[in-house]
Image (tube, rainbow, N blue to C red; front, side):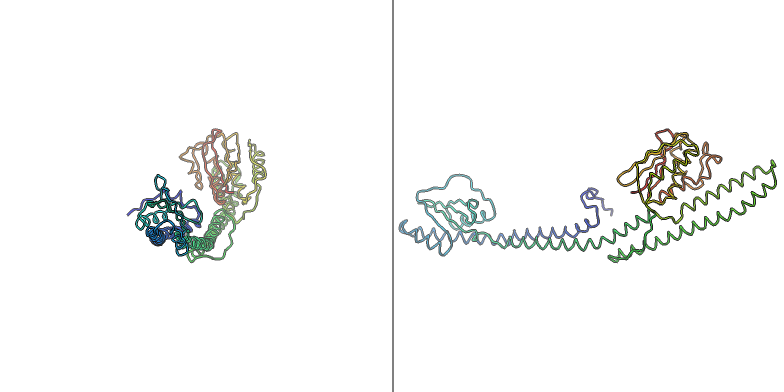
Length: 441
C-alpha cells in the first residue's frame, strides 16, 4: 500500500534534525498532559467542586430552615452567629428586599455547581456573585420576608489541588524538555560534524580523521565515511600517478620520433607523419595537464579578484580583448593553481572562437558566480553537455584543427566540482557562449 505524502507537513515541521527529534519527544508529552488535564478536570475537579458546592448549599439550607423555625426576626442574629462560628458563612438579612430581575449568568464551573446545589437543597430564587470580592463569593437568596445575603470564603468552594496539579505538571514537563534538549543536542552534534566533514571533502579540502562519537548508527556512518574517503583518495592518487606516468613515458618515444623525422629532412612523404607526431605530443601534454588538475594541491585562502586579474593580463598578452568586472579583495579557500588552470581554459576557449570576452563576478549568499561571456558562434543547447566529455570535439568551427584535444572544458569542470561547485554553459548576452563557474563560499 502506498502511503500518500503529506507535503504540507514539510512546511510546518522544523528543518533541523534536532528540532524534529524534540518535536517527536514533545508531541506525546503534550498530548499526555492534555489528556491528563482533561480527565482531571472532567472527573476529579468536577467531583471535588460538586461536593464543596453541596457543602456550602447544605449549610445555607440549614440556616434557612433555622430562620423559618424562629418565632420572629429577632432570633436571626443568634442563628447567623452560630452559622458564622460553625460554617464560616457570614449572613445578613434585608427585610422587604427583592432580587433584581435579569438573566442569571454562570461564569465558571464553581458557579454552575453551586447553582445546581442551591436549586436542589434550598429551592429558593438566588443570585451568585463570584467577581465582586477577591476572597469571598456572595450568594443572594430570595426568602418570603426579604433577601438573605451570604458571604462564603473562596476556600470553601475552590480546591487548590487543581492548581498544584497543573503547576507540577508544567514544571516537570519543562524540566524534562530541557534535559531532552541537552541529550538530543549531544546526539545531533556528531551528525553535524559528519556532514561538515563530508561537505569539506566534497569541496576538495583536507579532512583529518575525527573521533567517533554519538550513537552506534552515527559511529557506523562516520566509520563508513572515513573508509569511503580513504578509498576515493587512493583511487584518485593511483589514477593520477598512472596517467602522469604513462604520459611521461610517452614523451621519450615521441622525442626519438621527432629527432628521426628531423634527420630525414624536408620530404613531401613525411609531412603527414610529422603532423601526427605533433598531434600526439599535444595529446600527451593534455594528459599531463589533466593529471595535474587532479593533483594533491590543498585549498588555501586565495584572493579571487587578484587571480582573475592575472588570468586577464595573461590573456591580454596573447592578444585577447577581455573586460573584467569583479569586487576587490574576494578571499576564498581555493586550490590556486587548479583554479587558475580552470579560468585559463575558459578564457582561452573563448579567445579561440570570439573577438570580445567579458568576465563578470557576482557574489551571492551561498556562492560566487564567475560568468565568462564571448561573442563567438556558441554551442547548440543539445551539445553543451557533450563538450564536457573527455576528448570530445565539436564539428564546424570547433574542429580538430582549432579545437585542441577536447580536455579544456573537462579539466575546467573537474576543477569546479573539486571545489564543491560546478560549471555550466548557456547562451551569452553577447551572442555567443556563457560559461558560468559557481564556487561555494
